[in-house]
Amino acid sequence: MSTHLVRATGEFRPMLQLALPVLAEQSLEFLVGMVDTYLAGHALPDELKTPALAAVGLMAYAMWMTFTIFASVGVGATAVVARLIGAGETEDAAIAANQALVAGACAAVIGTIALYFGADAFVAMMQLEADAAQLATSYLRIIAPSLPFLMVIAIGTACLHGAGDTVSGLGVMTIVNLINVAVSTTLAFGLGPAPNLGWTGIAVGTAVAHIVGGCLVLLLMLGGRAGMQLRLQWLRPNRTMIWRLIRIGLPSGANDALTLGCHLWYLGVINSLGTLAAAAHGLGVRCEGPSYLGAGAFAVAASTLTGQFLGAKDPARAMRATLLSLAAGASLVTAYGVFLYFGGASLTWLYLGEVEPGSENAGTAEMTVRLLKVVAFSTPFMAALSILSGALRGAGDTKFPFIITLIGLLLIRIPGVYLFALDEIPLPLIGSVPGFGYGILGAWWVMVFDVTLRSMLVAARYWHGAWRQIEV
Image (cartoon, rainbow, N blue to C red):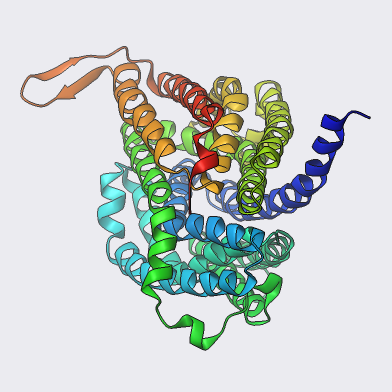
């Protein structure tokens, strides 16, 4: 066996040990939203199905927004904890985890207040129509009190990932899903003695599940899981450590915030095309979701191993681990892309059930299938973008991915969605100019081009190799 093969095999097992539990964990997290979408398509009256799917689509972005609030701290926590663990400084790693939760708690308070009292303004800004807008607003107000617990899940598991523990998050998300399925289904259908709350029941079940999940992560850290011990003296704000976490994570957090802001802008343009387009987009994103799970799991492996190997002063192993993660993740995600192209109809049937031919629900299903054929072409590029960006984050190289995101979203996706989706493009001062008018299909082709371009730019940055010299 060659030396290179032996070395590659040495990184393959830890890569799988990190990636597979994260894949399972994120799949379970995805199932929370999947259950909401399924119940929206089966537990509500036919006339509310398409509006509810449009609302669920916006809620997926809203939940993404809540995690983005904690992105700066979470990314910084993973990188710092991994580097300290790699250097053998376990106690300092635990202190970093405690301070990450302190910083996250401040963000959670602000986010909860903003989400609850800003629900109406947010939904209006996103241009949802009548029934869909009312459903979205009520969901946001119900889910807002669970935001601090989402913070604990997001930042607590980020610390555990940095310490090399990806199994605990899997256990937590298993319980979260069991509770979500049980409570949401019971309240949405009114099973047994439970009241039939319909849409409200879906939101209540999701909130309860996340509250329980956050409590479980706290219990794990109180018990010192993977060395990430919570201690009262370490929870007193330490400005030096908090700044270290934010300094590393802030560019990535800004990257995620920019990404989210542009996606919401993009979504607002799609919602302006009508409820059917909004519902097809939301359902398409839900069907596409598993491809992000595979890419995200191997991105965590690349990020953690890069941080740990750099902490051990071994950049060669860091690069081998990343390339192995890329090969495995891209293969998995591309295979799912093939399924999206040829089997998209089966996914829409799963979420919507039988639909009456010629109805608005049938139109939503038909458009969703067409969108899935479009997005299938982007899956290998999306995998490369996610995994290589994860490796750069693990090395502390977060500025260049931010610049690349800026280029792709602000110079490609946003101008492109106006140009290719709309019949007329509103412009300040000079009025409207003609667009190509391809509707939501045009919007999704622009998305594919954006992802492809950014994946190439991130690959070039990684290959340049400056990440080897970055101090965190």
